[in-house]
Image (cartoon, rainbow, N blue to C red; front, side):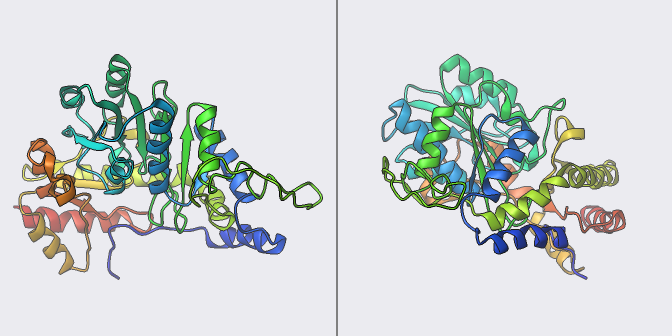
Length: 377
C-alpha cells in the first residue's frame, strides 16, 4: 500500500450516527449541530467566542475585514505576515486592499520577532502569526511587540487544533484579538471542510455572525421558535457572504473532537520516532518545536539539500512526501517583497514534509526514515 503524506482517519460509525440525527430532524444547515459544536469547542479550548464557518480561509478573510472596518484602517495599510504559509493567509490581507509586509521565519518556521519589529512602520496595523505545523514558536514575543506598537494580532491556527502550552490553548492568550482554526479534510480534526473564528471581543463575534450570513442580523436557527414556528422578519446590516458552516460538517466535527487529544498524542509518538531516527544524521535538519509534548504536530518537516531528489527516491518506494510551503514572495502578486526574508527563501528550497497521520505505524516511520537516511548519506 502506498504511504501518503497526509491521510485523515474518521470514526465512521459514530460520525454516521451524528449525521443521521441531522437527516432525521431535517436540519442539515446552520444551527442545531453547528451551535452544539461551537459550545463544545469553547469548552475544549477556553475561547469566549466561537463561530463555526465553512473554512479557515473565510475566517481569515473575515478577521481582516472586521478589524479593518472597526478600527478605521485604510486601503494600502500594512499587515505583517509570514511568507511560509498557505496562500489564503496572505490573500486575506490582499482581499481587503491592504499590503502584506513579509517578515522572516525562525527555527520553528514561525515569525521571527526580531524581523517583525524591523518591518513595523507608520502604516503597520496588525500581525498575522501562523502556528506552523502546530508550533507555538515565539508567539509570546510577538504578543509583546504588538502591545508595544499598538498592533492587532491575528492567530492563524489552521494547524493548531489541540496544541497547548502548559495546558492552555495559545489562542486564548491575552493580546490575541482573533484566532482562526481549520477542520479541513486532512487536518488534525478533519471534516470535509470547515473552520472556526474565535474573537476575544463579543462585539466582533456579533459582526462575524452577521457577515457570515449575508449581513442578516438573525440567522435561520435564531428565527425558529421552540415549536418550530418560523419568524421571517429580520434586518440586513452589512453586505456579507454565505460563510457559515453546516450541521453535517459539525456532526462530524463533534465526533472527531472527542478523539483529538488521543490522536494528537499518537502524532507526537510518531514525531519522536522520526526525531530519534534522524538524530545522528548531520545532513538532515529537523524542524524543531517548543513545548513538543503539547504540540499538535499537524505536519512533520525536515530540511535537506536535495529535496526534489529525496521526494523522487521516496516515491519510487511508494512513499509520498509533500512540501509545505513555497515562499509566498515567489508568487508574482507578492514579489514586491522578494529577497526580504532570506531564511524563509532558503527553507522553501529545502523543506520536505514527511508522512505523518493516524494510519501510520512505527514500522512505517522506521522504513521511511531508513530510506531518507540512505539517500542523504
